Length: 165
Image: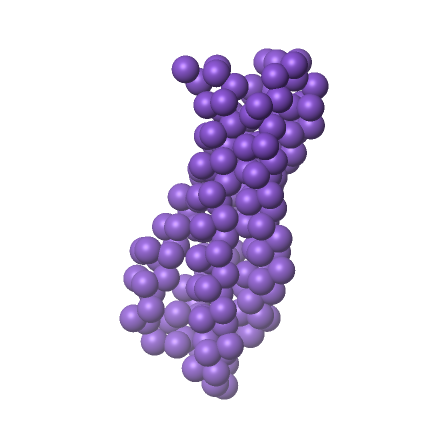
């Protein structure tokens, strides 16, 4: 059981790290990088990114950050030494904030962009960008910070187990 707990904890840590890197990377490079694009090009860029990101590698890390953390919490209750459990629970909560924020805020905005269709045919691309950009970026920062905090908490859990030493 201890080995399963360790595997779940490491998988949660790796998944959280991948998500933290992705979302913070958007915050400090992708979104500032495409900010210079005109409205139609910005919409086209986001539409394309949103299409290509839905792949197995992304979904494994995205879902894994929550599923593996939950497994580590559950398995943590069966450990003789539960000192890592508060850290693991904190990691799970942070990963849930990232997951729920993504599903409740960023995904609907992505869907709004996709539903607009071909950027060349959008009547008022500036209005669409105005509806999406600021909120999307704000919530991306939230999920980036949540992922980073989740990563730190899970690192704390792994450290607390003494197995990382």
